[in-house]
Amino acid sequence: MTRLIVAAGGGGDAVAAAMLDAALYGDGDQAVILTYAWDRLLIDPVPGPRGAENFTGLEPITPAVWSVPADARPISPAGSTLPRLAAELPHTFALLDPHHGAEGVTRQLEELVGHLEPESIDLLDVGGDILARGDEPTLKSPLADALTLAACCQLDVPIRLLVAGPGLDGELPLDDLRGVLGPLIHTFTTKDTESVGSVLEWHPSEATAMLAATARGVRGTCEVRDAGLPVPLTDEGPAVHQVDLDEALSRNELACAVVTTTTLDEVETHSREICGYSEIDYERNKATWLKDQPPTELNSTAILAELEQFEAQARDRGVTHTTFRHITEALNLNGTQRQDLRELLINSRPEQYDAPLWRITTRPE
Image 1 (cartoon, helix red, strand yellow):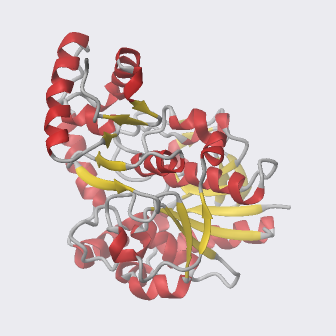
Image 2 (tube, helix red, strand yellow):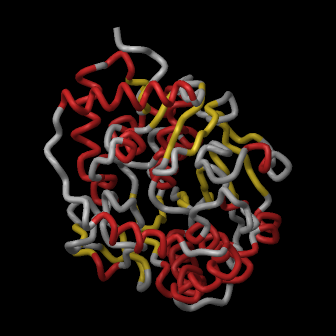
């Protein structure tokens, strides 16, 4: 028995897909997870997604689809979380390559479905930005989800669209999604997070971190991203809802526009026209800026002092939690220092670690 889970936006969606697989189908199930190699700049300093030519050690599944085994490596200067995911999780991670537009992604899906003949196909998005129209002021990263949605809607096989943690990506508020969300499929629990527990200790995805945190009972308001977006952590955070696939496509203007694209450049052009920007342009600009921000040695005394000031201001904003990525950027540290900062904070104040988030409501004694 083979199941296919398509991680709509790559990144943390792939981790959530592994968690979903264990929760819905049992720990013995080892689904094939089809996902983009598209990571934060702190992992991959090269803007945009990676293709098969950016790796060594990939293994062919079909002519257009390659798996990323544990011993695969991104070619420098690119980086990727996928080989480490393959090393720590029992699933097969297949590479979704967007460089040939929606037609290329559709071809990959058709080949993989024909090869695997999966018992089920789930398209998973954490947060719900796959349901964006394209003009929402809070929308930040619509491109990957829209492209995947457009391709999935071209397949002549049943595909179930699932949204986990509606609102948790900080892009579309939960209230904007309620009218579109369909039946509740599952509510993640603490036990469900055990299958990805080790991954959550290092993976940079903020949305999936909050999904796991809410499954573990964390509640409050979490501040995320470089912009410091406040995201409510509520009882609806660990929910997984089904959404009608055709309704999602008709709602998503960018997905409708990119259906016939054959290059990633075309997809970007449509994104600029419909949404007013391309998130890859944002990454290009940020990567240029980061080149001028060399890492400095962490001074624990200075860091903890700056942290106290940050936490005091965050408390005034009503914030109860944050991510280590946001702390890294709020303290003007280089993204490569995130893991060292994380270890420093947890070792210094373990009582504030609401895994995998940082709790900032407690004042140091």
